[in-house]
Amino acid sequence: MAKFWNFVLFQLGWFACVIGAANHQVFWPVVITLLYLAIHVARSNQPSSEMNLLLKASIYGVSADSLISLSGFLIFEDAWPSRYLSPIWMWTLWALVASTINGSLSWLRGRPILAAVLGAIAGPMSYEAGIRMGAGAWGPQGQVGGLMLLAIVWGAAIPLFLYWDRVRVVLDKNQP
Image (cartoon, rainbow, N blue to C red; front, side, top):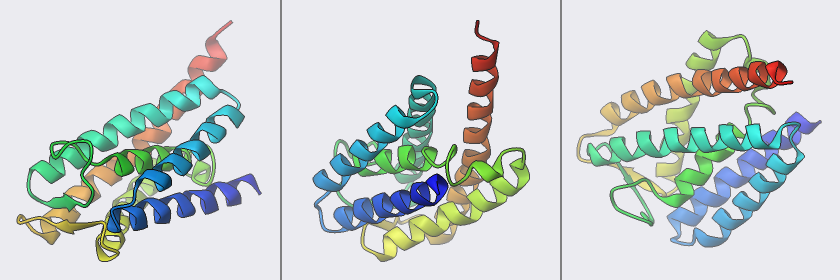
């Protein structure tokens, strides 16, 4: 049941942030999503390790999204805090994705190829959905190139996040 609620709360956070961005009203969606993430971390078996995973995933995502945007493939609405970085609501979404690694996506453990394929399909689909909802636009470099870059980023992201989590579990077991 926890995996079900993890999935539902992920979807609610995603829709709230995307709709908020489309309407230039991201403050409350971001605050509420961050509150959920704080509760998620506090309730996890290893809070500091879970927080570490969320932070790493966010840094990965901010870096990837910022480079794709700066390369002219993607334009975000509500670009605070800087036009050189992906917007804060996207930072929140990357952490939200990472919160599913030990929840609704935990079934992908030990299946890196499947994780890569699903990431390469679902990640770009989420961006396309967000764009269609008004949270962004394809940049002058075009939709096809943007989708291809996102497929690469997301095809690597999910297996990488699962790997980071596996390394964390191994390290936690080896501590006295």
